[in-house]
Each structure stands twice: as C-alpha cells, then as structure tokens.
Length: 60
Image (cartoon, rainbow, N blue to C red; front, side, top):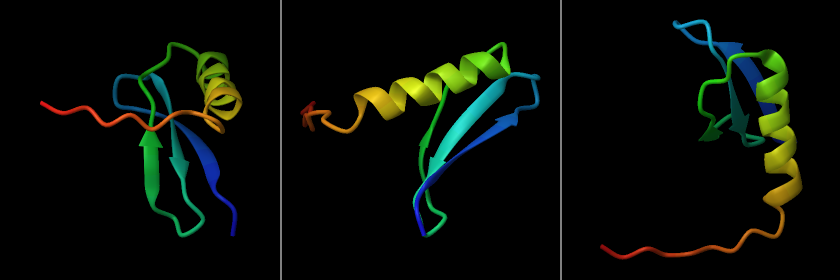
C-alpha cells in the first residue's frame, strides 16, 4: 500500500495535513493553514521538494 496525505481541520478551524506511510504510521504533520488551498499548496511543496532532500544531522 502506498503512502497518502490526509487533510483535516483542527480544533482552531485551521487546515492541516499529515503524511502517512503505507502501514498507516504518521511520518509528517504540517503547520496550520487558513484555507484548504493553503494546505494543498503545502502538500504540493512537499511532493516537489522532498524526493531529493538531503539528510542533515544536527548535533547539540
């Protein structure tokens, strides 16, 4: 089963999305957006920019 994006509204009425892996595990959650269109634009950005994203380890 492939992963999927889910869009929902939170308690404040903001739109959010989460990315779920094929096994149903949540692997990413967005910030709140004022509109559903904003959340969809956030999804499009993740889809466009994440495939080749570098992995950077930050040490404290």
